[in-house]
Amino acid sequence: GGSLSLASGAGSTSGGAVSIDGGSGTTSLGGSVTLASGVGVDTSSGGLSISTSNAGTAGVSGGVSLATGSASLGDSGDLALSSGSSASGSGGGITVSVGSGDGVGGDFSVVSGASSAASGGEASIVAGSSSTSSGGSLSLA
Image 1 (tube, rainbow, N blue to C red):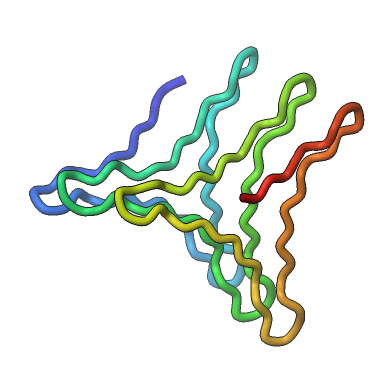
Image 2 (cartoon, rainbow, N blue to C red):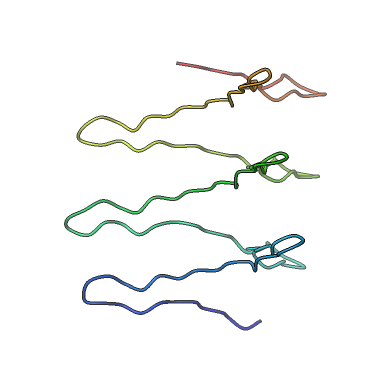
């Protein structure tokens, strides 16, 4: 199929920004935004990469933020990060890696939600089970 490229212009001070937004809904839902790679009918599907560029000779690299919106009435949105299953091979892995540096290495924290009117959220880390072999191990160091 054909390619689609979205790019903003370069600038002598700052480059142009690219923004993709779903439309607002006054009395109903706002518009959704979907980023999806293509299906390979007889082969592999395409990949999806979200990243920032390296910093230049001075400054810091850009950050990446994944967040759901807040809600004043009702629940806020969930954020799910999951890999795919396989019917005849291994399931996809998920790696969370924190950067190293000449100074202090990056921090890693997992924090469950607080509540002012009920119980706080639970946090759990569970190794995978197996119906035909040993379950996965869990190591904290």
